Length: 163
Length: 163
Image 1 (cartoon, each protein chain N blue to C red):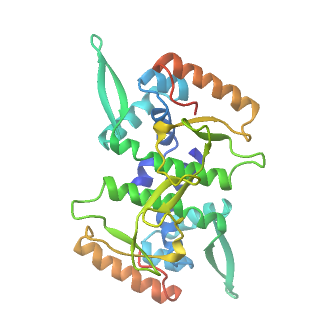
Image 2 (cartoon, chains in turn red, orange):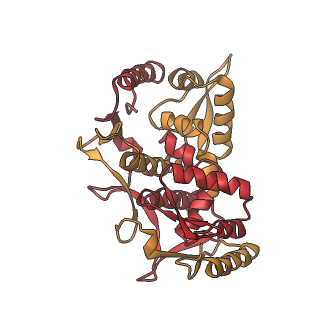
Image 3 (cartoon, rainbow over the protein chains, first blue to last red):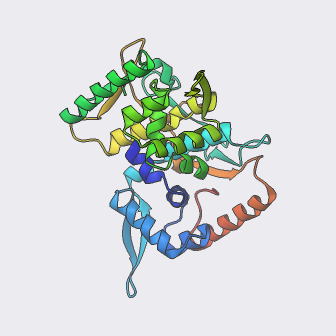
């Protein structure tokens, strides 16, 4: 989670990603549409390519020019952006309503993203959950996890969760 | 979306929020559990209180001590964190599996967060969507929105969306 936040966490990266989701591919498109400086864009695109979120491919030779397209890993990030948009609509929007609406291309209906449990379809509520070490947690982290749980019990009473 | 990203975007804020979701309330709890410096924590908590994500209330007098609890607006952010966790599980986790599992307290089943359309229950796919100005978009932004759409059409071919 922290690594995802770190990736999305500067002002420009989510805007660059949003542009990629909605069709921009070329360096100059991003510059022109976002008004981002060329240096900042170079840095952000390189980071997204390094992370495997965007793929860089040549679309022209002499001079070579590249375009940036979303990988499958990148497309999967749309869920995170959509849940951010929904939270903003619910908690930051003006009284008139959200600044932007997402519309289903086939039905024309407004789409409202919500985060649910894949199995039950019920909205996620942290009060009905606890967290536990998963199969990919290493031994050192497991010890640290138990230690955090003990500290939390000590200082704040019974913990609702073990994250 | 950019404002949500900005809020969640430094390394510490999502970790402070995660701790709040799982029971920590007091300044010293956050310090001890996260190993965060007192200055950084003071700054992050003040930001979260300013944004209305945490509420600060006195739990002791002389000396006055405060605790920090999630507001309704803050609890709603769990969806964003859950979608980040899911993306990390799908795309950053080791072969063994995710480092942490979320478990439903009443059924004991593992919960897998997914972002769906509230009305249809279908997973969100940006390729099946377009974006359009909503009722809360001001006039200046509406002009800018149309301009971006035109630029995108010009430079990248037909746009799939108008965001």
